[in-house]
Amino acid sequence: MLARLAAGTLLAALLVSGCGSSGPTIPPSKLSKLVLQRSDLSEQFAAFYFGRELASDQPGFRPDPQRFGRLGGWIARYHRGGSSKTAGPLVVVSRTDLFKGSSGAKSQLALYRSELEKSPATKVDVGKLGDEAFGITTLRPGALSVRSYAIAWRDANASALLELNGFAGKLTLPDALVFARRQEQHLRAALQ
Image (cartoon, rainbow, N blue to C red; front, side, top):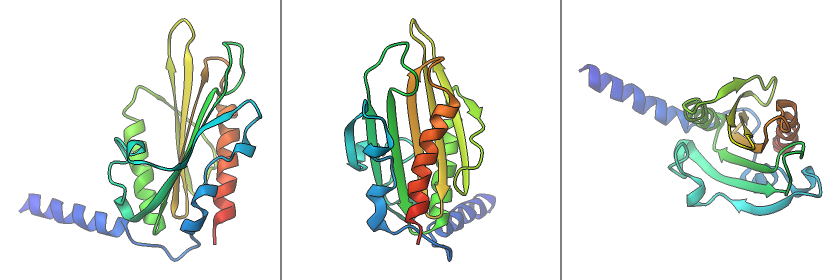
């Protein structure tokens, strides 16, 4: 009896998560504009992928392409050369998933939080970003230690995830937030 009640509650939560919202939403026609654009980065960066999220971009916490009423996703990957003295990120990955309603984006953000917080990471304060947000950082020690940031947030019916990598001591949280705020501007501009 208790197991059936729990299963019924879970099913109801999943059904509700696909429902829309009455507030402004971002239309699917704007999907490619919801990630960092080439013009958002310095000229040293080169794009090595800019397009729809592929099945290979959906592992782990993004296993089902239609989850939560998902309409589609876009990803932009950029990199630049550098040395241990190069300030800022060397790799930037910007992605956005679009849903029928804000509840789908909320569910996606909850999945991001659940998966990212499982890693050996430290939570960081990302301040006001979107309708809700969180961030983590990790440090991979070595001869040249690598600092990584993952910042996830949602705006209306979109969820965004920004991942940046650079050398420890050369990539900071304020650096990462500059890029997150640039991407957030694209999301806010697309709201209708």
